[in-house]
Length: 142
Image (cartoon, rainbow, N blue to C red; front, top):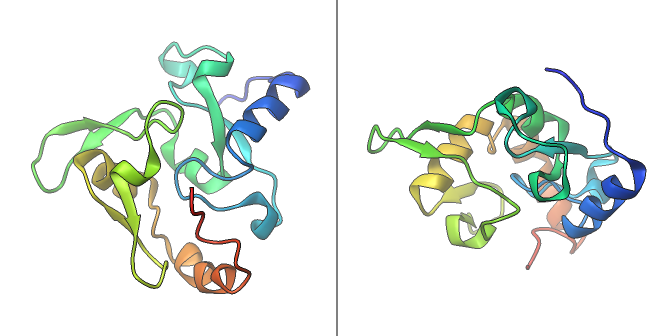
């Protein structure tokens, strides 16, 4: 995966818009202790540009797992579906939290394929989320 330079001012603007959390798994930078990556929603490899409307924050694991994909097959229907676009779509329309905020549940085909393709319920997150909940800062309410 090739890294593209993003100006500091643009990076900060995108980070503020994303509320300093991953656009996919909603892991907060404050609680992970790791800076988020600037992610190209449409990857550079597929012609995506390094401009504000194509950038969002992603944790390094979501960013690496997404790689250059923009769609995946829905295991329920077998159809090809676009991945969630955190800049254009509303997270809570496609996902919801399990009662204990440990798992992300897909409400739509977009939610389902994104959870599976980006491994949004990977073990490291399942282990961390209960501890994050104790801070009162997780899960995000917006």
